[in-house]
Amino acid sequence: MVGPQAEVVARIPGAAAHGLVAPPGCPALPAARLADPAWLARLIPQGTTSPRVRATVWWYSASAVLTAPVLAGLAVGRPLSARLEDTTVSLAPDGRPVAAVSAAGHADPVAGLRETLGAVVGALAQVAGMRARPLWAVATDSLANGLLGLGRALGDVAAVTALAAPLAAAVGPPLPAPRYVDVAGTRFTRRVSCCLVDRLPSGATCLSCPRRAPGERQALLESVARGH
Image (cartoon, rainbow, N blue to C red; front, side):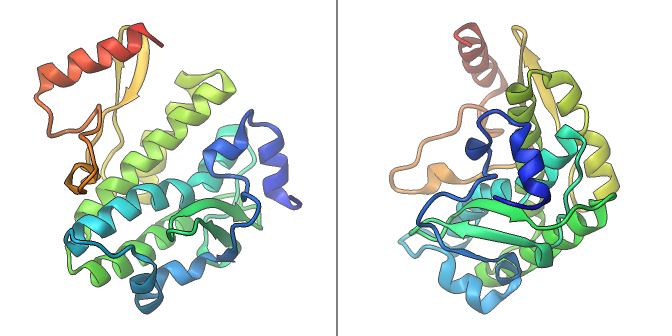
């Protein structure tokens, strides 16, 4: 890898696990295609579940990858552009983005992040015939999860996750505020969205699903924290 993202990747242990390094054999495409409803409609997996479920599940992973470069850049103090025009995405055979690479640095990536999320969410909502707001909520959780993972990799969870609220506030509505919860000394994302993975034939309810009863969710998080 060359260019400004290479400097960021060099500072993050296990950067490939954060969607920052294109896997071998996965085609890299202009990220701007993700804002094209016609192209996006061909990319979303088909199945027996509703278009809303398939689109939301796809966006749950895609939004994590699409925001990875800008979050990583902020985490290490080397801001990268979040504009679709500056970004390429690598796709797995099933159509999921698995890595994103930004080709440009940017002193203030917030406007680009706002435009990117707005463009892709708008196209995806159109394709799925659904409201855009739940997809914005998924993007918030991807932002929170991304910074949490980067904080763990960099060994400073508190500092890196502290970037989440100001970043979301700068992007502005309809992006909800990201949230975290500390359980037994371990920080988790306090989800504001449901990824709908459990609506798939082989899906299971996520550990931190907001549709779980609060007591059940707390007990599960405590169990994970004790084993962390």
